[in-house]
Image (tube, rainbow, N blue to C red; front, side, top):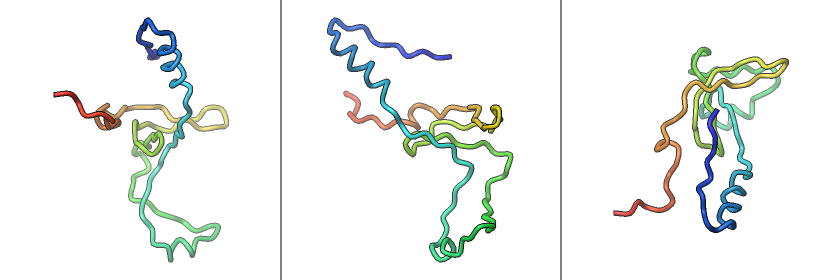
Length: 104
């Protein structure tokens, strides 16, 4: 299990600021598959309609945080619920876009 390290600082306000960032909540979603569907087809949806996806059923699911894919995994059963066992983490440069350009 990884741990988050807080950089030491002489200023306790900075440490409290960084700790407070760890309490921010983000939407986490697991996506089985997706596709674009024309609105006229969506309007025909009724209970029992089957929607077929091109993704094979044995392919990994994607883990998204606030709409950005950060990992892939497989479905696991946890009691009477389901979970996601992460099998691969996206490369950091694929997940985050720097807000400040790097210094030259």
